Amino acid sequence: MQTALHITFERMEPSDFVRQRIEREVAALEKRYGRITACQVFVEGPGHRHRQGGLYAFRVALELPGGVHLSASRNPPSAQQHEDAYVALRDVFRALRRQLQDHVRAREDEPKQPFTQPHGVIERIVPEKACGFIRTDDGREIYFHKNAVLGEEFESLRVGAEVRFSEEEGRDGPQASTVHVSGTRHRP
Image (cartoon, rainbow, N blue to C red; front, side, top):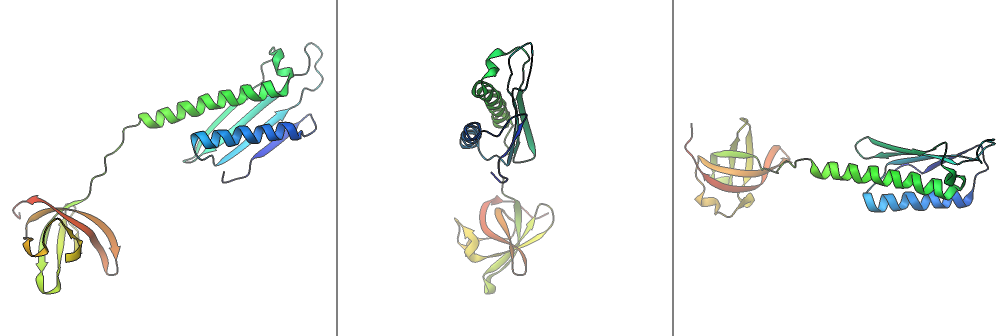
């Protein structure tokens, strides 16, 4: 977790047992569902209720990467089983696990954008310097060295050949770190 787990006890003395159980639950969530950026847990003690025995209430707020916020609380007014702090704690983390499962499923269902390398056409070849230049589809000029050419001999390259390339920032501007000849086309 990027920020330390924050646990607040209200209307009760802090309990080491409850704190340890919360830490185990949060560690299990983080292990199973990935990185949790921040987590706040609010524990409300039983207080003095006359009609029912004192009930524990839990509120948990998680922050995930990308600014995603999830929260769950368990404070049903008639849930007598919540007279036990561990039962209330179990229920709130069970609800949070369901939310995390839904969040993970939703992310898996998002359509993935396939990775495509940029395309271009060899515009110039400078054999005496063992380099060349690619004109990209968006009109930029990218330098490449003969060592960046894969699957072809540098000497067999021709002006107008269509290529795919990987771009990186070089000492003098953009350059292709790999160049794959993908076909040929005539220059416009």
